[in-house]
Image (cartoon, rainbow, N blue to C red; front, side, top):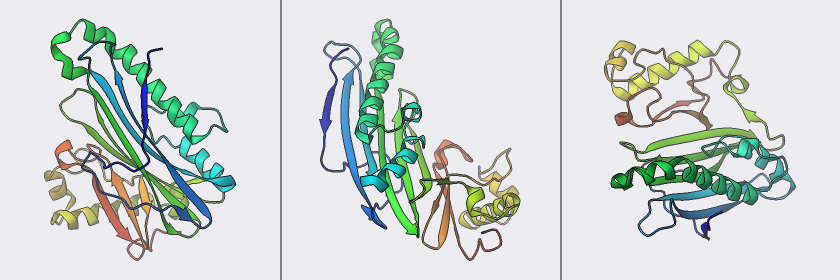
Length: 266
């Protein structure tokens, strides 16, 4: 296997994409966190001027016995793309998982792109790959942390793809909470209506039809995202780039207070 250069950094690097900045905590209710930061530049071919894959990862992870439960949820949470981690054996450390992810990513890059580039030398930029993922831990509610991953991926297309994935995890059990764990039975339609109404407020329109005219929920009904942050007295629903609106409108976040959600909260 060709040599891969790994540069371990001790400081969190600045995020290159334009997503909302998140604050992170290093401890929550006796659960302590640390981070692994890796930067990798892997040339596609072993020759001067070769296109390359640039990979930056910062992964937060729990320390100690309590951290093992949280780390299992993180590894199975699909925070990195492709989801190599989800198939890794139980008991693997975060460092082993991150190193394995990078090796798999680079191997797939070379396997998929090298044959194409050898026959298409005139379009070098099309074979440049950039993958940036930074993770954060938030602690707003007793017994729960929210693990957030911001990813920015560029694979030679017209634009990069930015994604935010948030999962709320019970500290003691490691259970990842879904919307059905937070909201009462039958919440789907009432909560979808609340989300649509709040988005109407944000866009200064009065009806769903007018909202659709502005490019939101076109040809689809409003729905509840299972990608949400349990904040301090509020819940923020995240719709990633191009999920409910065009790429130009970017990531959509809709925040509802606990008071506004009173009718649907458990």
